Length: 374
Picture 1 (cartoon, rainbow, N blue to C red):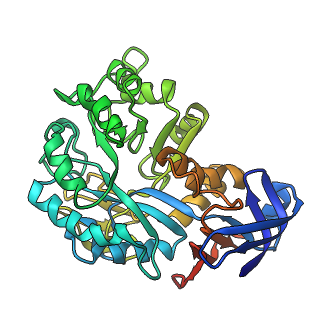
Picture 2 (cartoon, rainbow, N blue to C red):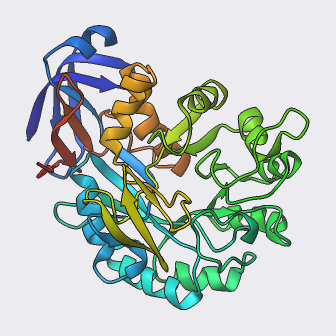
């Protein structure tokens, strides 16, 4: 039975003590006495947090999910080395043939965890059911929701999240059908109004895709989709790379949305040097810490979740328990994965061990120690 000592973040707060993992990858027990989070931050003792959960991953380590084949397995290995213990492989807006290629490669990865890799919990279908007028970096193959197409894809690999634009004809009306079928729906890549957002939430949509990006902005007379999120959302993604959203905008969202959670929206360029990479049918360029199309449009990120945690704490001033919830617990709860994103008896033994500067020293995925990036 594996045992780790240090300052361990439980749902009730930090304890100074130890955590034990069972042979089958669960948390057996946590023992220790409560300790103040401020003291933990300055302590040289190891800090043990729930493993990171990323619900929006397009690529990493030079590989793109849309390639199919073994790409998703290699992507999951890269992100595991940065503390992501579970993730959703995220697809691009594309023709059906491209999506089928990607999903065929995802089938085995979703069926069982690969060695040295994050658990791939399923697929986030970011497109194609978006507004062609708000593509962002998505290729222009947008179309309304098609239930027959969805079933063909879901027969290949499990779809857990669907991003859609509710104002696209037919999309609003199908939200309840999607929810009843077991999908979680997010609003994104949208030219919809505040009223469209409120109605979509009322019909069962559960959150927003990369808040602020590729959606109608907030104006005091036209609050837009951002206004709907800030006024009504419980959950929403946000990319905390400090490029996709200004720190001031992030602070607004943190005050407004109780379970705002972080995603990387990472591309094949994550963990790689500057250069040219693939994002679906696009070629993108990594340079100066960002990833862009030829016209300068941001095209995903190079962010990893360990850096997201550091940005939340060091740049935005969150305390460590709050920051941890926003890179793990809230995402797990949004997905309905109550046995992940927290360290408690019976939960999966997904954990990261950090030093005083919040750099990784160890990562455990379902109790198995992962070799880190060096």
